[in-house]
Length: 374
Image (cartoon, rainbow, N blue to C red; front, side):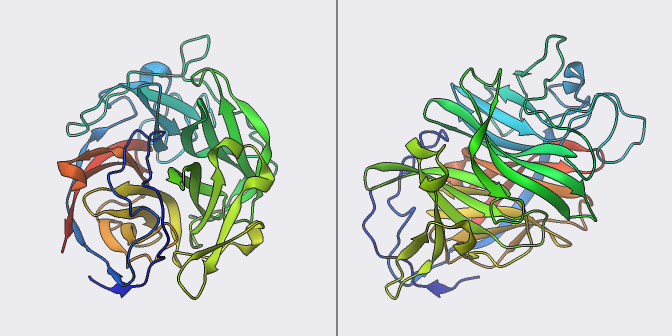
């Protein structure tokens, strides 16, 4: 699929993804010439490479009382790749499907020094409690219709610290729908051993930034963190916000993409209510990274009822190409959360690797895929 779209024509210094562990070789992360065509034609060679979590994983995470968990967004910090998981459970009855079991923790984190994604990922360890079990990083009340759980939607490194973006879930509704109190950031300055929930920034549970995918970008000599965001559940579109990385902990420092001017240049507002939709679809558990092979942004997400899809982006705010199938839901029922990391690629980015959650057996799996371009 090819299309020709106008992109913003502004002068930008080449971005460096140091905090994400991937140095960009292109100056095109924020601007490309007008009438830039899409180049991604298909995603093929999709193949599972093993489990990341669970008793059957190479890591055998049941030794940390992690028999079942989900999500698995990734970021680099202090020479390790950190995997951030959602609701985590200890022992589970045979044949149990979905979230549930003993020893419930709302969130956990593992880490690895595994730099070869081609044969799967093995965790070196996890953040542990005093008993040697995977620790809950951020507490939750675990009370339905109050605060059912606190889910980390993504982690990232910045300013020498580790951050988690979290959402406070009030109630799980129908499949793909849930009610959220609010969302915000938590910070660790001791390599994930302890976490502080920050007073700000905070986003309302109906906002466009309940769930996010972050990326560091250097613009005009200033380090920024961009976030692609979606609302609660899986039935809304994606928006974009940015903040100077040094100001991550200031609510009023965030800027929200509101559209483009007549010349195609991005416009930014100071109110989250102004945030424009840049991908108009049913977007669940999105992941956005820069891909050197395409010289483009790529976004993966669960398209409810369809499966995991990928879009190509000319700039962070678009235009974004049509969704291409990666893993159809019919081929793998109960799939969700297709998380990528910019450093887990081969062949100059032609081969990508990603984590994928499966509701039954409620664990995280490791996949590869091949990108084709015109």
